Image 1 (cartoon, rainbow, N blue to C red):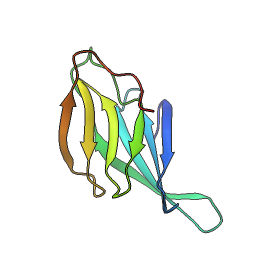
Image 2: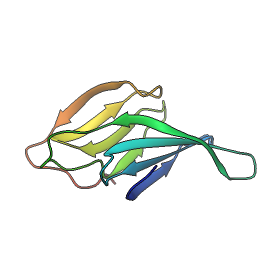
Image 3: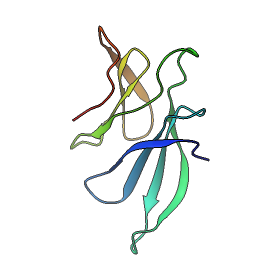
Length: 99
């Protein structure tokens, strides 16, 4: 269940829709997009818990190969299309968005 959805992004092929839950859950959810545009099969894609005082997932972008970039604790978290956390690009200040 999403407690506080913030940024979201539709993957270029139009088949997946990602949502940052920046509330208590602090996770990234993914939904399949049906032919009629409805969202189905919602599931947790990745978790960015961090420490209690650290920011939750916020800005989100997807590149052409399908890597997901999400602002989260300590920087920009990078995920592969299957939900594996590849690493975090640490930033000197907490990023709040991706454009």
